[in-house]
Length: 330
Image (cartoon, rainbow, N blue to C red):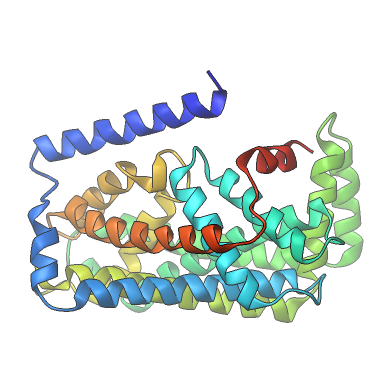
């Protein structure tokens, strides 16, 4: 059996095991789905916010791509990004979806090299993470007093958010390092056997993109907006079930930690893992039903990712998973 297929089966089993345990222990309340649908247009509002979030994320990636190509346009990048989201959600790992969408981008400009395309996908994800860490860190600082009165368990989360914020700002500074220091770092990376030259090539391209400070800073700003929309989408689904002392302000400090946990492709689309993490996060706020809350968000997010089927079906030239795997192994 193919290695990727085995990984998929194991991830599905892992996610299913967690979800089964949560359901049997009454931590996963599926009745909330019906209640949200009965409470008015909140599910639709959440869906619209996540669609907007997806569109802004595509704009961010197009900015990075435009540092090397003048043939890139958002009207192509947005459907390509949706295709990547769809396959990243339902395939073994997040990488497969990335490589597939890179093939479509290369169709737009044949002069774009593999190392550049890989670097744009990587830096786009890193900038997305930086935006998330900034949102979580700044909100934790600004709402510190309001958060700490909720529960003693919140303080470690706040400290964690602030540490991550400092790390994110440190990374941005590294991205803007003087060229002479970057040259020395590249030479050191090349010393590593077998993978040294490849890593050095990607790192060098990564830093060249970073030389466009305006693009990087705009991309970080767009990332912040992306996550504000996502957290607002989460709040719109669960606000009617929250305790009176927990509002959207508190969620801006808590939700980023949960979203970081599902960024690693341990299970399909974070299923199971996200449910478990959000259960514990909301317990820290003195609120139950965390797994059920994430389940609502998870279902809406999956619905948005399903939109990627439309451009994939309508696209004239379709790329296959074998082509994506070939690009990965080049």
